[in-house]
Length: 455
Ligand SMILES: Nc1ncnc2c1ncn2[C@@H]1O[C@H](COP(=O)(O)OP(=O)(O)OP(=O)(O)O)[C@@H](O)[C@H]1O
Image (cartoon, rainbow, N blue to C red; front, side, top):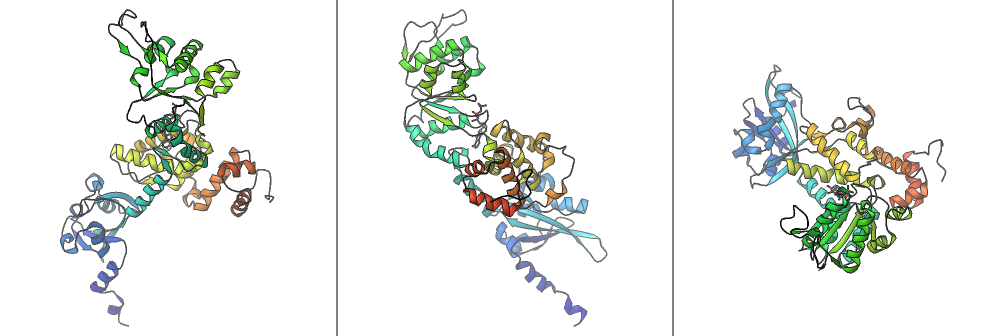
């Protein structure tokens, strides 16, 4: 075969390019498009004829084109960009997520003559991600944990009743979110939801905050001020940190709940209220009762329906979902295009114990948004306690972390949490003990101090 026939002709090259499912186009050193394959036409909605000779930014219309053109970066640094997620606007004006990779184009003398960009449409992945998020969410509460799903199933009934609800759970587990969900699902949803942090206020302030005052009740009281009970009339009053109120305030509240009336400061007459009460505490209220710090009668008055929110460390399967949720949230809020978290970062996030629960995870992602300028959040963008080592150290083995490794980390974490008790671990995971044993064997996980797992 002659040397000439071994090289693909320009027409053959076009056919090859058109057979690729990813969009491919090339630009010259003036950023003018020199080739544009069929998939690129399909994704952008711009025809080959309209694209050729145009500046690439006028065709892709990506936010990143003006902020930091990836092709320019490739030509300047002579380094390719791999799988960067950005948003483009197609010919119909729809915003599409795409994953971009770039490479340099050189002539026979090795001079840079342009660059080539390949891009993949991620809309389907994004739709699927949103579908999964929807499947695992209830109102604004995201979870795939079985205990949380049991809770989701009783929330509508709870919302339809008028009984007082007590929500217990560590700080940041989503108590207010659940209280809002109950309100939004209830017949009271068109009326106000009013939240009061009872732990943050001294008695006298809390009293005027809750019940309001009449003009002249004290020196500075020039006119009547409605309290939160009044503002929440026919709606829901969320009393957060109820375990922190003083004994005197406990007596007062008990009477208000029993008699369904209250008196603003300085008033002579009682006012009837129609307010649904949802109380929350991050302390175990029953323990406070046993210690004599919380009145037993008030406890039973509030504890008609009780919900307990598990801490995040007991539902680590929610971490990837919540990470995606907060990524989306901060991308929208800050007009950013952070495309995800690297495997290394996710491994760190999956092994941290979150004393501050979901709020802490939210803060960790928000902080990472400040440090991560573009692309993916990496472990170097996470605070030190999350990874347990300083951010500059490398963990080479984590670079190639597979799904199997992730599963092993996840299972080890749940086992550790349950002091390596298999029955408790299986129960927490909602799987049969024999399934857990099979998984541990397949992943080669042994209890500390044991060489071989017993079936
Ligand atoms: N399951 C969840 N899905 C999505 N976001 C959540 C979830 N749980 C909590 N959050 C978010 O975490 C943050 C803390 O939640 P929230 O204020 O409801 O917690 P809390 O238990 O009432 O905290 P505290 O005891 O400190 O008052 C909020 O921004 C909330 O939106």
